[in-house]
Image (cartoon, rainbow, N blue to C red; front, top):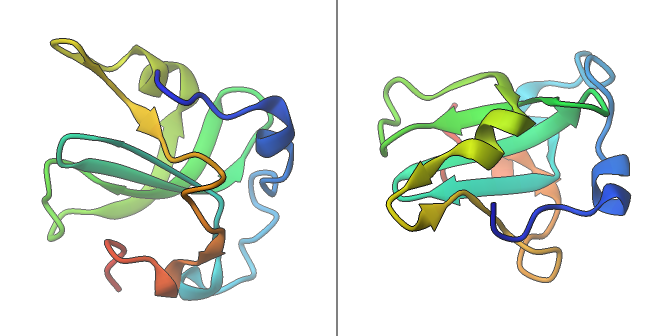
Amino acid sequence: MWNTPTQERLAKIPRLYETEHIPVEDKLIHLHFFIGGCDWFIAEYDGGDLFFGYAVLNGDYFNAEWGYVSFAELKAVKVGFLEVDCETEDAWRVRPAGEVEGIIF
């Protein structure tokens, strides 16, 4: 994985289920992982291997959905020489899902 988030950055993400009372459009998106036409927008983290967020696979916005993804599996994805990347803190501004281009309601 390119630009693997630091432990300090991961520690800022709410734990799983901490934001379930918050409407999805208001959930803060803390991380953006991507490769090709695939995007994962992360709102919660279990502190180990499991993220909760919004996934768009191969640009398919019709079937995009909220759900869980394994950090280990994201790290393992490779397409030729490409690996999953994570936008750096300088490039990604934490913001509500409703303000993130690519998250459809």
